[in-house]
Length: 311
Length: 298
Image (tube, each protein chain N blue to C red):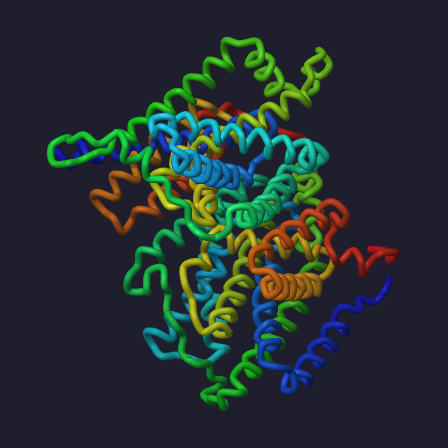
């Protein structure tokens, strides 16, 4: 059996980012941190996509994570990065645990549409909630780490460092999970659910677990995005945000846990470069790249790296 | 009492708008099994074409009463050009793919069309108020309603009745029903299924464009117009049952009345109520209110 090179590759990337971070310009640090936040969400979507489920409402958990972090700051003046991320993760995970009883019964287009409806419910609620700034949202407190508040120039690097470490741990755990029996059930569910049941496994239970994991990751990503950007608004739950996450998932492919982060980074780069060069055609660039990937690389960009290797 | 009447009238007007905007989606899904995100783009295309063409003709001295026909003409023009281009140029190569993948393809096309619209019409808003103001308004109690809204109701009824008649009483419609029920057998019987796909996609998109064209006089036509329509139409057709024509009508009426009631009695809940109904219907009847049981797949 070939050794799994993923943990070592991940560790190298993390070390490189941590070492280069202090010398990188602020905007690249920002771009990278946002990419990590979105990558966490996409990591969750990848787990779902492996069993053939596409959620058009993952923005729900992204937004819950962000608002959980924001509310902690607003009501209790909590600003510790780890606390906020933990709160976001728990809030999303708990919501998904409850909703999972319903959603784990749905497949294909209906799974997508029901998750879309639920995320739009949250959007509708937040837009009309004046205490939380309605459609404008509100700002977060500047982040701290274990009670320590770094100089302004270092805040971004600090958040990046935390994000890299958190994403590293999440990616390693998911990598392990994919190799457990429950994780390996995903492609089987995608191919033929009834055979999975004949085998004695419960597809519904497996999907419920995956759904909660995906939501927890999205909550983590949402809280991280909130601390990075310093502002949250209901748009985070809108269907276009979910669309963006699915976009990155398809772009990246499901081949490896590194793919979501790579996909999110490439997405961020395409978005900001295309937006800079031509603000009125950046969506066209995104749409065309999605079409090209679907048609020519059905397994995503990651298949460029894994070509020729046994999967 | 008066407020109840207002709820009813607002609800009917909103339902009419929703029905026209959404019915094409259910038609396309029913025949082609595509959940078509570009539907919102066609709505926006229709609105832009109608606003710019009608505006230009009015500026050149066209009699204002002709503008109602020009609105329709612009919708036909834009969808007859763009829809076949998309269906023949891209979608027809994708039919073998999974339902969800085709949805993503239409999402990609939606992103592209958003920018195509900006490239053609720019980012500044378009206004055409003439068709709206021309007809004047009528009073019911203390409430004033523009007659223009009645045109929208008329368009909705015409679309619904016309579609039902076409499906049940014409040769084309009967062949289309055969295609809906079994594509392969239809093909074996000599029906040109490809032509029906092209026809359905164009016609479904045309309905969205008509929705946009007749809404254009009541709003300012700006980029991003179609974004909200997509998810609202999803809600309408999902409530009624994807692919069902009476379902789309029922969904539009439910959403329309529910929304107008909440606007009058509980304005904070306006948006979220629609999606609550959608989620509730999906939770209890996943295939919508008008749907037949589907055979279990092995």
